[in-house]
Every structure is written in C-alpha cells, then in structure tokens.
Amino acid sequence: MSDHVVFRRSLPVGVVAILQGLATPVVVVLSLRLVALLYGAVFHQYFVMLSALVAVLCVMLFDYQRGGNGNALVGAPRMPLTTGILARWMALLAILLTIGFATKLSAEFSRLVLFTWCLVTPVPLVLVHLLLRELRRKVVMDPSNARRVLFAGVNDVSISLAERMRSSNELCMTVDGFFDDRSAERLSEVRAPVNVLGRLAELGAYVKTHRIDVIFVALPIRHVARVMQLLDDLRDTTASIYYVPDIFVFDLIQARAGEIQGIPVVALCETPFAGYRGAIKRAMDVSVALGALMVLSPLLLMVAMAVKMSSPGPAIFRQRRYGLDGREIIVYKFRTMKVTEDGARIVQATRDDERVTRIGRLLRRYSLDELPQLLNVIQGRMSLIGPRPHAVAHNEEYRKLIKGYMIRHKVLPGITGLAQVNGCRGETQSLEDMQARIRFDLEYLRRWSIGLDLQILLKTAAQMFTDKKAY
Image (tube, rainbow, N blue to C red):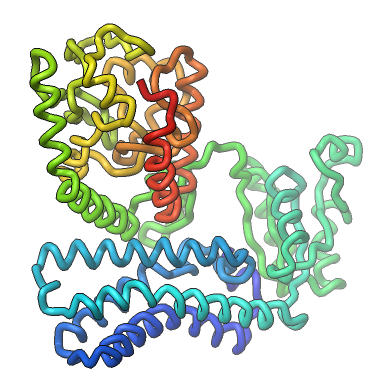
C-alpha cells in the first residue's frame, strides 16, 4: 500500500522518502570516486559515463517504492533488507558486465579500481539503508501520523487487511471496527471474530462523530448499488475512501494495478518480467551464461567427445519443448540414451533405465547433460531460472489434467527452477507428482525476485552432487 494511503502527508516523511530515493545512487557513485582517489586513478570521462549509467541503474533496481510497497524499508527485517540490497547489487554488476562486454569499454578502466569498488560498495550501501530505515521508522511511527480506520463489509479480504494493520505498528493505522448489513448469526460464520459497530447506513454518522481518517470499502463487486449508495452517504465527510476488491476469489499471478489511457485496470495474471524487470532478468541470464560457457568450454568439448565415442548417435540431442507463451522451441542436451525420442509418446527415464548409456548415467547423475542449454539461454529461448520445459507430448497430456498448467509458460523455461531445488525433479510417477511441480512453478511466478533466482542457483549448485532423484 502506498504512502499516501498509510501516512499523513508531512514534511519529515517526505524528506526521509527523498533521502531513501537518493541514497543508493549517491553512495555508489561516491564510493567509485573514493576508490579511484585511493588508487590515484584519473577520474576521466569514461568514469563520468560509468557514474551516470550506474546512477540510472540504481534508481531502477533499488526503487523500493515501486509497486506500491511504500513500507518496504519500514517494517522489513534487517536480514531480508540486506540480502535484497546484495541481490540488486549483483544484478547491477551483471548488467554492467554485459554492457562492458558488448561495448568493449572495460579496457578503459583500472581493473583494480573496479574490483575494489564492486567488493566494498555493498558495505556502506547496507549501512546507509539500515540507518535510513530506522530514521523512517521513527518519523513514521510518530503519534501525529496515526490514522483511524473503518471497514465497510466483513469478508476474508477485509479481515486479513485489518489483522495486518493491527500486527504491524509501522503502518500507524488503528482499526475501529467494521460495518455490515448482515445479522449477527450470519456474521458468526466468518473465520474470525470481528468488532461490528453497526449497519452500513450508520457508517456516515459514525465517521462524522469519531473523526475517522480512512474507510476501506470491502463489499463484493456484484453489490455495485450498495457501494454507490455508501459513497453518496460519505460525501459529507472528509475521510479518505478506498475500494478493496475481494481478490481471494482469484488465483493471482503477479497481480498489480495500473491504468490504460486514464482507465484503471487490475492485472490478475501477468508475467513478472514486464518492463525493466525483463531487462534485468535477461542481462543476468546472458552475463552468467556467457561466463559459464567460457569457463566450461573445455569440459563441454570433453563431454561431447565422450558421448560420441560411447555409443552410435549425435553428441547433442535436440528435443521439441514448449517455451514462452506456449510456443515450440528446440532444447539442447547431451545425449544420454541409446534412443532420441521426440514423438507423440515419450517414456520418461526411470531408475536403472536400460536406454541410458554408461556415460549418460554419469552425466544425468550430476546434471551435466543440461549444460548445452546455456546456448538456449544465449539464444533467448530459455532462462537460467524458470519452470523446467517439458516435452511437447507431456505438455499436451498434462494441460488437460492440471488446472492452470499452461500459466507456467508466461515466462521463459529455465535450466533449473524452484520445483527442482525442492525435490520435484526426475520421473513423475503419478499425477500428484506433476501437480506438486506445477505448484512450485506457479509459486515462482508469484514470488519472483533477483534474490530468489540467486537462491535457486546456489541450491542447484549444492544439489548437483547430492540429489538422489537425478538418474
């Protein structure tokens, strides 16, 4: 919820918000200048260009106010705030690495200066944000910022919002109670006891006599006439009024509000990689995939030769999969079987499968057969992290059996994903196995962040030598 809903407009709150917005670019650019000064490097025009680029990227990547979460730096615990800053810093460095590789300007800078800057900058960055968060907490939690709240309508969403207000002191919102037209017997069926102060027709009078600041209207969308009547009754008050749709009736994927030519719209199911997020994700994919290919190229060559010599057939197996928006793509893998199935019926590999070659068993055990998919990442067909792409035959089978199955294709498929690091990999012996995998895939779409991607990468690396489902 944005600041103008939660807090009163006051000069101290505004000043702290401005400081939070300026903190990251100022700290990062100042850090670069100080490191260059420390090593006696000339701060030439390329350093100035780098400073300007970094400042713009900081505004994009470290904008905690984006998405309406104005309290992200107020109530966030220290560790998630720290890891969030570190994750964004790594994403910024990945973007700079990609730009430097593409423009070949990296040679214009002292490597010692850049390396030191990359290493030391996160420390003052975290400290400054922690300091500003504490300052914002003190300013925001001043009693003069507290607002009194009422809810029109008792349902799951209004009860949940009220509970969060009561449990979060940082919001500075005091819930007086609820107004609803239903009888006490019907209201007893709700999932939690609530303080019902009266009927909806009595709401206006209560607001006038009790100096209520904010009213959240949580009536069902179908009750348009009642909402309109309520708004008419409240026109004689100075309270702020917000409509809270009953979003719990939907299975939301990246829900957010916006507008099209002045018409407000609410996204109920959308990709998490719209706009600048997509650019960040792509920059991270390309930079990491290029680096991995350069480092692993000798290993890839040796594996390809071993596969080719171990059994008849190509070293690289190409299979049709579904990619972004359900379009067919070709995915590369090192061939691990004596067969190359890609038809209307594909039998999944099982433990001790006779089709798997001796070298193929070793490759599958340590997931080395997936390494050629780094090329798919460079091509833009796949991402490092995302829902694993299934064979076309399996997609056509499961999309008919699992509700919401195709939503996973709103993002690029990944070499690894949230499902895989949570044990959902290998053979799907039952429909329940695939349903569990899809639940994790959709959860990834809901929760995506650079930090989550980094966690999955680290867990994937740790599981390469311990995963018992890799066969």
